[in-house]
Length: 367
Image 1 (tube, helix red, strand yellow):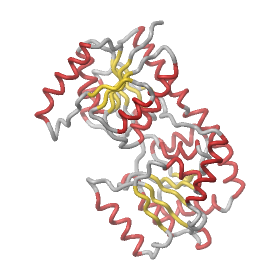
Image 2: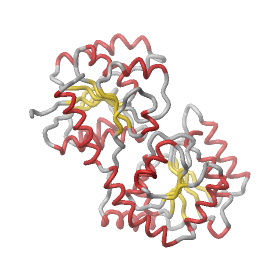
Image 3: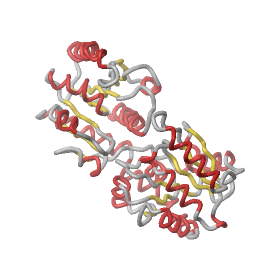
Image 4: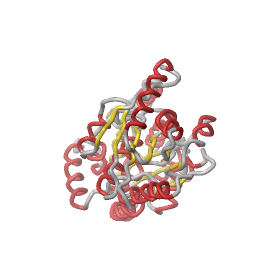
């Protein structure tokens, strides 16, 4: 079969979250797979473009203005994307996100090009039904996200699984960096927004027995749209006299370097389409306590790895954290078996192979 030339369209120019990480890992996998020549389209210069170019991938700038905030830019953006699609020999368009689908995917469909729409978050609205008819395939990471659509292909998001030597080196370096922290050292990672549930984790942490209440690290930056939640968290820390026990790390580009130095990841969001930080902890051998929500339940069901609290109730979460921290054998087992579980279910290679399978289907029979 001849080389397939997909253009993968990013919703964002910056590394906003797990969607951009997953997109770049897919580009890496496609670049290494053979028989695929990927191109990346971004809405502007930024970290996504820089990292893609570092892999040797051609990058193009396609404007993706907000239809709500900048509607006057829409006609010009349509002309630009239409000209790119007509002027270059792409085999298909892979739109990563709703804005990318609304402009690039919809335009590609009207130009007769096969379209893959990759959706990574739960929720959705009437726009889904309008856009779904322009997509030849919808790809999602979990059953939770698949509920947005009439038909969707489930392909879990990928993570990089470090070697045993890399994990040990990371662990030693992170332990030195975090040496001043009291043990046990708990991590909660995610943007400081209500849906990520840091308030629940904070309350559960305050209920731990004194002997287990070491240090809680909250990694993530406040949402500029909802800054009040981050302020409320800091106020709650003060009200409960936990200033010496809770640290706000802000956005950490080196999060994967820090994770191995912790003793436990606690993740208790209100909603979760996939659960990337859960799988990244798994890949790095960091034990996890999480809650039965959305994609997190699916990951636990698929792998059998990690500790699932019975609910998001802070008391129940605290009991699960306590039981796991006191079970050193279980902690050691999770640390040992996590990387292999991540490699089996969420490797870059497995994700890439599944996506290439979708591409080949479209080349053989687009609709």
